[in-house]
Each structure stands twice: as C-alpha cells, then as structure tokens.
Amino acid sequence: MGEERVKLAESNEEIQSFMKNVLRDLRALKVMLDDGWFETDTIRIGAEQEICLVDDNMKPFPRSMEILEKLGKGNYTTELALFNLEINLDPLEFKDSCLSDMENNLQNEVEYVRKTVQKMGGDILLSGIMPTIRKMDVELSNLTPLPRYKALCEAINNMRGSEYELRIQGMDELLMKFDTPLLEACNTGFQVHLQVTPDEFVSKYNIAQAVTAPVLACAVNSPILFGKRLWSETRVALFHQSVDTRLVGDHLRDSSPRVTFGNEWLKNSILDIYQEDISRYRVMLSANIQEEVEEKIKNGIVPDLMALKVHNSSVYRWNRPCYGISNGKPHLRIENRVFPSGPTVVDEVANAAFWLGLLNGFDEAYDDITKKLDFDDARLNFFAASKMGLDTKFIWANDQKVTARDLISEELLPIARKGLEKANINNADIDTYLGVIGDRVESAQTGSYWMVKSYGKMIKDNNKEQTLSAVTRAMAKNQEKGEPVHKWGLAKIEDLEHWKPSTLLVEEFMTTDLFTVRKDDILEFVANLIDWRRIRYVPVEDDQKHLIGLVTMRNLFREYSKAVNDDQISAHHTVEEIMLRNPITVHPEASIMEAMAMMKEQQIGCLPVVKNSRLVGIITEGNFMNITTRLLKTLAKKND
Image (cartoon, rainbow, N blue to C red; front, top):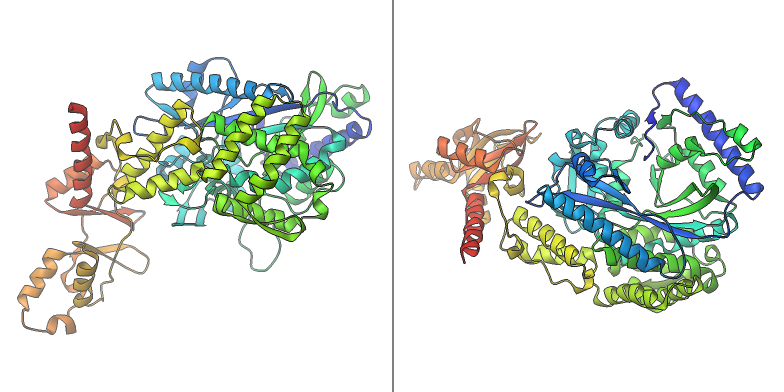
C-alpha cells in the first residue's frame, strides 16, 4: 500500500484492464525467472517498524501527518491510521555485524521519532496493539487522508458491506460491531525481510511456514484489545476478521480469507503463490500503469511489475512473497509479517535473528520439512501459538507432541545458531540476540505475559481505564530504557505520573458488566439482584437491549415500605410499576466532566450510557469515587 498511484477499481472496465496488467506482469516474471535475471550473489535483510503514537494520557495521538513534517526527509511514512507511522530501515547484507547494525540503526530512528513526538506533547509505543485504544479511535475521522487508504477502505466495504463484527474468545470475550475497516489499524508489527535466490525460494518459503508458529510463540506482544484479555497475539485474530471480505454463505462452500496462512506447501516456484492469489482473490485495487513491461523485457530492462505488486499488497499472507529491485537487479524476498511491534528494539532484533537463523540453517537439520510435517499441522500450530504463546503444545515433525518452550530451547535455538554461523554473523551478535530469546523462553515472560500479569495485579484495586493506562505508561518507560522484556518488573499503578481525568471519556470509566431486568420481572427478583450483586441501580431494557427504564434501590425500598408485612409485593408487583421511565442518559464518548455536571445538575446518582439507542454501560457515584481516589493519590504524590 506504499504506492501513491493506487486507487479503487470502480468499474468492470478498470478491473479488466488492471487484470490484464497483472497477467502481463506475471508472464514477465516467469521470463525473468527462466532466463536467470535475479540477483544471487548478495543476500540482504531488511525491516519495517510500525509505531503507535500516544498522548499524555497514553491514548491514541492522531497527528502522524504533522509529525512526519517535523521528522523531515528520511525513512518515515504513513500508516492506515493517523495514530500510527512506519520506519523503513535500509537493507543490510546478511553477514558480519548486520544484526547489531540493524539494532543501532533502528534504535537511532526510534529515538529520533520519540524525541520529535515528545516535543509535540505525545510519545511513542512499540506494541502489537495499543492497550488503551478505544472504539471511537477506529472511526473514519482517524483515517490517514491519502487516496490509497480511502481506496482500500472503500474496496473492503464494497466486497463485504459496511458492518464488521468482531468475535474473539480468550480469557475475556470480545463481541462488538463496527462500521469501518479501520479496525485493522489497531495492529502494528515489525516486518522482517530476507532476500532469497530463486533456486532456494521454495525450500526457504516452506521453512518459513513451518517455523512461523514457534517463532511467534516466543514473540507474542498483543494480548489486550478494547480492554479485553484475548489471545496472546490478538493481532492474528483481529487482522483475519477486520480485512475479511467474505460474506456468510448459505452452504458449505469453501472460501479463502483475504488474510491467510496459506493452503498447502509450496511446490514449484514463487509463481505458484502469485497464481493462487490471482485465482482466489478478486481485484480490490487498481493503479495507473504507465510501464511497457513487454517492451522492457525485450530490451533487457528490469520492469517494476507494479500491477502484480499492487495485487500482492491486497492479499495478506503471514509469510508474503515480495519482488523488488536493488541496484538495477531484480530480487525475491520473504517478508515475515508475524512479529508484533515491540516490546523493545532489542527484543525485535532478537526475534529477527531467531527467524533468520532458522531460515538459513533449517535445511541442514531437516532435508525436506514438507515430508515430515503435515501442512495442516503447521497451520494449526500457527493459530495455537497466536492464542497461547509459550504455553502452546505443538504437533511437530514426525508427529511429535512438544511444548513450545522445549521445542525452542532444545531444538530450534541450536538450529538458528548454526544458521547464523553459516551466514558468518559475528559470534558476539549471535550470543546476544539468541541469548535474549533463550532467557525470554526460560523466564516465560513474553510481552503478552507481562501485560496480562500486570493488568491482573492492578485491576483488583483500580478501574479498567487506570489499569490500562498504567500498563501502557510502564511499557513506554521500559521501552525508553531499552532492557528486553524478560527483565521487566510488573507495571504498578504508580506508573501513572500525570493523570488527567478531565480529558477522559465516559466509556473509559463506565461499568460494562451489567445486570439488567425486563419490565415484567417481579420486584422480589430485583430486590434479590440488588442484594446479591451489591448494586444500587438496575437498568430496565427490552429484548433488543433498548433502555426503557431504571430501578433504583431507593424507589424499590419506597415500594417495599408501603407494603411492609404484606406479601402482595412478591405476588403481583412488577418492575414496570415502579421503574423510572425515560431516565437521563449519557453518550459513551461524552467527557467525564460532562457526566459529572449532568449528575450534579439533575441530582441523580447514576447515568445509563446509551449508544444508537442501546444500553452499553452505566456510570455511577462509585465510578467517580474511584476517579477521585486516584486523583487525590496523584496530587499527594506530587506534593511529597
């Protein structure tokens, strides 16, 4: 999606014309492969770093366009949402000190971006998913205002309609509806590229598929989305669902998702992948193609193959084949899209080193992994690792059942070491980066484990907004220090140094675990509900979850006092007789200050929170007591 000339394919004529260009590019690629045009004497690695932008309260900071202006010329570019941006690292030859060089280059770039953003009142975060992101942040107002991003969103909407439903089950459950594909912008990754010769492409690509699961298991860093603890690498589930263009069918017809691990081992060449993607996935986007590819091939000039690259960019393989040109010569790459952003630059380069070492050394340990590991098991392993991280149990070669920690420590790390040695990587770098992986696996503290444990420790005494903000603030602090995640202590609520509730929203503090009643329920049930759950307010809703009333502990007691010693209450009286009709409500995106003012002015103790006429939460004096307590602690600490 980095090509500025990309646009929506709006008519059949445009689609047909673009498809002709794609097929023409594919023929040209075959000619170049058959005639040996590709670079084989130099192997390079590269990476792309996606970054979250956060404000003072650790919420999304949608100012990427201004930030890019301040950054000036360099390897910086936009992402789908205004609260993300990307750093593209210059490629390095895969030898000697390339890993420590990659770390130094990335550290310098990240630090420059961090200082620039901090001067503008924000900060940066390296996280697969920003823990504090809210539903309102993925509305189209935060779409980066460039034609190619608008075209992508329109293309997805055209294929599947404008309603998106997320269903992800983990420790908690997320079940929400959205009206924009900007959901995908919740994901940020660290993409690693390895240049591969045409002769080795099939072998290396199959190795990449086989090892995807274990390398992801030890790199997970995205466990929380919209305040819910879900998969260890929730990016995988979110990406599959947010960019899925399929409609639910009436019958059992197979239909491939646009985000895919693949369907089988690669057999012949990179052309197989491109042919499958052209066969399975309709054209979403087009581009203004000016290039005379056939003429260039005839004259021995390397073509850009822009149409093929644009179509390839709209099919999201976790291991993506890539075509590029370096110093006038074409090359092939495998792009690893599995790794999340973070937890630190050191962790990311360690993940890259592990993956690169495996791709370079695996064929000496396994002559042909496709004969020892069933493809369906490799795919199953990938999704299992996404869910469970280092707690995964894999089906491995020769139908072994092995834990992620044992597989990585006992088998894969030694293979990766040999692979890096084979590339003549400096021994000190090998020790450093594979040592980070080894220590992380031994301690079992991935980024996801750290986040979930920190959250669980704090949520018992603090509300969700404070807890998520403290986790995010602690992440940003630890990232700036640079120590790898296995050395981090758990986040503490004291990490919230500058807490400003006046800028926060109702949805960040409201109670969403609701106990409601229907208008025909008997009062005895309501009285017991209030007693059992220790609540003072019970919303009344209909079967479509529309708010139609409110029962307060006060009006329930009043009704009981009228009928003391008279059991007509339990026999005949219903909620409808005592409920407050049309209670005053508030929108989830109203500010906390607005909600407090409404409650004070109306002299009420709670506000049901309603969006699109449906009840989504409730905010009470208890919520404000928590806010006040935290604020007083912050002020007391500041005055000490």
